[in-house]
Length: 92
Image (cartoon, rainbow, N blue to C red):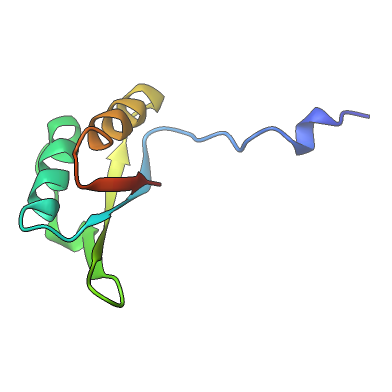
């Protein structure tokens, strides 16, 4: 009986569609900054794959970008660079 099989994270098969949610302070260039970083690793994004939603009090902005992920290294690089943006508070 293997206990670890139920505790292992699910394996992602690449390439695949992969949503990335970025939450940050509502500042003038937040969406543009986030998209610029993601596009460094993916090329131009289709606007249909980008969803933007303000928080209830409009203090925060959520940008969800669905990319065609090519591998674990690409995702790690995107996450790392997004976290360098000053107004970004969380990357999921």
